[in-house]
Structure formats: structure tokens, C-alpha cells
Length: 503
Image 1: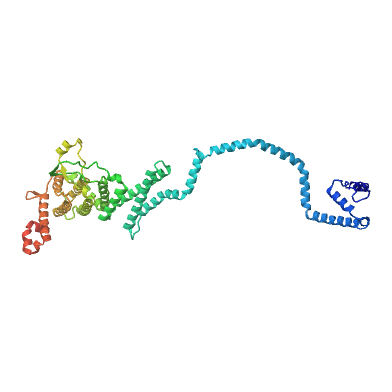
Image 2 (image 1 turned 180 degrees about the vertical axis):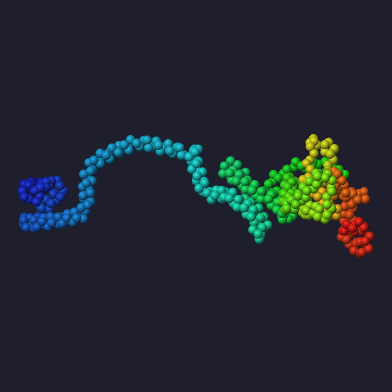
């Protein structure tokens, strides 16, 4: 083949040839070798006749293929050419970056090792702990949300208890109180389980504020003018649960010792466990009593005017020379009559309700003082019963009012009527163990010392006559109540002329 290549070599550089601008084919080119092998197999006639046409046809076919390729892929060819032009500058840069990466690989390996060691689960790590808490919070976000809603739910329950519906006020209030107490108990249980949690501590403080609000609502309900026994017992029961501190005060309880049946104690029973609730109940009802009596303010102002005129008369003449007309002291009479009516009704209701709500707080036979001092080292006597002190306060309240306005009433029959009404009030409380009937004797002595004269008939003070008439009337009512005095003769025998005149 080399001989044939050398034979054709002089014709490769023929001027004006289409391949004159191209470099001559190499003898080691596989295509050249393949064509020379094929050419050696052709005859001379084929070489001179068909081979030129075959070459021309192949050249045109390749030209059309190149044209179609250039039309179809000219953009890729241009891009490849531009990239090929930049390849000379990219290769050195790539080599430099590869060398830099090779130099940084040890540092990367060291950093990866440090990271794996730092965040290893087998060791304690603050970052991992923080991430664990964050993941735990994410998983329990619903529970945390429910816990955060507890103060708001408790506040809504307390508001519902404060303003119950008209149709079912008692039932809705009881339900609201029960729900509020359950929520508060749940919050206290959470605070006991998680004492170190600031979140639970804050919720517990908010709950205590709402419970104090609920306590205020319950205490305010004890001041209602329409409070009934059942509602009072329910309210005190709720207060025992809402404010246990009020029921845990044992300071006034008497200690076990020998009993003396000859005297009465002013202290509460040792079995009482109501603490300050009894005193709180009496204070609330006393506030209601004062509020009810304040409705008599217009009558009291008129009675004060009569008191002012009486003092002016006494200062001018130094005697009790007032007109004995039916209108003398009429305003004071109206005020005192209405005052005693309200006082009798409210005081009886308060004391009877207290004895029903706090049966253990009623005064009991006292413990012998000598035995108490001998058995106990405590030299302080137990505090008196709240009911005893309250009854004394009621008597003082009524006595002060009578002392202020009774001198304005000069008509004897009117005074006797008012004193009789006071005796009925004393008898009403006497059925509950708080009779103050003898108070009118002390009242008359004070009025006599103030005015300097006493109204006596047949040598007897006015209060003695009033009490006699009252006893006769009380006997008559007792006989009629028993059904004994149904006949006319029996009634006539029981009544005396004095009672008839009083009637």
C-alpha cells in the first residue's frame, strides 16, 4: 500500500484542486489505508470510468449532510466553538480550584469530626437539649394550649356565676361554681406536680385572682335582701370550698374540759369548724339590715327635726312643757314603728338563719373557768361566739335608736304601743335565745336621767305597766293558740280590766 500511496502522493498538491487548501492525507490514516486497499482491488477500467463518479457522488452526499447538519445544529456548533475557545482559560482555573479543594479536605474532615463529636447523642449538649425541648413542645402544643386556656376558662366560669340567667339562676350558678372549683383544683394539682414550672406558676397566680373574685361574688350574694335559707346554706358550702382559710380558723374554739351546767358560755362549740365564716355571714347580713333601714331615711329626717325642736324647747324652758296634742311626736312615732317592724323581721331572720346554717356555732354550756385555767397553760379565754356578740350589737343598735327618738313621743298610749312592739320584738328573738325585754327598763332610766322626770302611774314606772299588759296579751294569745280560750267566759276570766283597756 505504501507503494501505491507514494505513486499518488505527487497528485495531492495539484493547484486549482478542491482539496488544494487541505493538508494531504496521512499514510497512517485508517480511512486512507482503507481507501487504498479498496482502490487496489479495482480494475483499471473501473478506476478510469466509475471511480470518479463514485467519488463525486460521495462528495455531494457528504456536502448535503454537512449542510443539513449546519442548518440543524448551527447554534450548538457555535456554542461549542465559543466554549472551545474559552477552554484554554477554564482548564487552568479548574486545576487551581481542584488544588485548593485538595488542600481544604483535611480541614473539612477535621470540622466534620468535631461536629459529630459535639452533637453526639451519648454526651450532654445544651443545643441538643434545647432542640429536644422544642420538639417536645411541638408534639405537645395542643396540651400546652389547653393549659394556657385554663385561666380564661376559669374567668368565663366565674363571670357566668356572677350573672346567671333569670330562668335557672340557682341551677346555673351551682353549675358554674362547681366548674370553677374543679378547674381551680386541676390547676392546683398541676402546680403541685410541676412546682418548678414558671408557666404553671403564672397560671396558678391567675387562677388565685379569679378565685378571689369568685369569693367576692359569693360574699356579695350573702348581702342580698332576698336571701333564703337554702341559698344561704349553698353559698356557705361554696365558701367552705372556695376559701378554706375562712373555715380553718380555730382560734375561738374552746378546749376540752369539765362542763358547768349552771352558766352559759359566750364561746362557740368546740365541734365548730366554721372559722370566720359565721362572723362573715353575720357581717354581710348586718350590712343588709343597715341597707334596709336606710330606706327609712325620709322618715328619720322628719324625726330629727322633731328632736331638734325638742332640744330647743328644753334649752329654752328647762322643762318638758310640750303640747299634749295627738300630733306631738307623730313623725318620730312613724319612724320608730316602721324601724322596729323592719328590725324585728330582719333580726329574727338573721339569727334563725345563722342557727340553721351554723348549728355548731350556737353558744353552749360554758367550760368552767377554774377548770380551764387549771387544765390549760393558755391564760386567754376563748373568743365569744359571733352570734352572742351580734345579738348584743343588735340590741345596742335598737337601744340607740329608741334613746334618740323615744323622747319625742309624748303621748302615753303611743309610747306604750311602741314599747309593746319592742317587747314583741324581744320575744321574737327570745324564741332564739336572745331575749332583751328588760332593756326597756334601762332605757326608761336613761331617758328619765336625761329629761329629769319620770312618767309613773299609781307609783309604777311606765315600763312595768307595759310589761304587765304585754304579759296579759301574751297569755291570751297562748290560750287562744292552744284552743282553751274558745268560750266567751274563759276569755273573760283570763283578761283583766287593764288588758281590756290596753286592747
